Image (cartoon, rainbow, N blue to C red; front, side):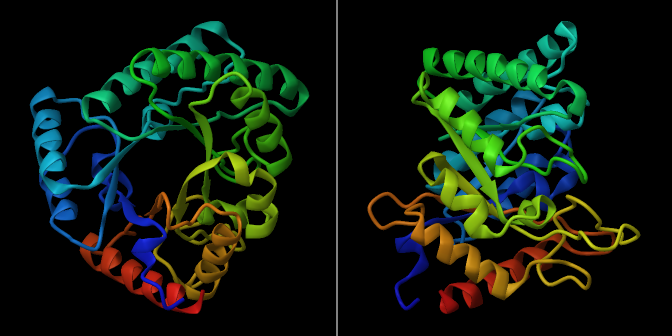
Length: 303
């Protein structure tokens, strides 16, 4: 593609994955956010909870000066606390809901453009009950987000039987769910992720085109599926091109082509498309980020 990619999307990065020590809402968050905000390659950043009010205020100040689009990922609120938004135990589901509603407030405080979460694990013998619980939870989140400022709410599609083992899940169930929620909540959408597609055993065309009208946000990254003994096996988001991994320049280029065909990448309202890459032991975050940018540049040239 000869046209500048920034005409079609806002390149972004998930801060808490690039700097995983911040995933629990602690650590050197303002300083690492400032590193990303100082990089003109990125036009968007995704952050998660920030427990300390002073650190949160500093991050808000940095991002306000940066002219970046800000998105809020609430996935760590659930994953690090082992909470399940479709928990069949009412008390467990309430705890998950409460932390997500707190996340909505924090997202609004940071002036985020969207709020993302994921479905939880499920028992195959009670999958319909888990589905109904997820519907009820998502409706409450969407209603609350709308009442507080019409914040878009996005459910990220994860693997359903490898690592996170989330209910949503396969594209057929993702479409059913999106149709049901979006029928009553205009602020709802889906988030798709290249790094999850091999885990789902779906191609970009299979995973994206059936839900194209619901996709509001997208991630790009890598995974390891074929070797359970690999240190990055599962949904670990290693760097592109890691030996034993699934995604590199070729796969990212195909993903971009399908996102373009689906109308997600566009010149009228360019969406956010973020890297989700995590340094492995011994790797430097800045080097992994720089390598990711090079991969995207090469992939875009092939679209």
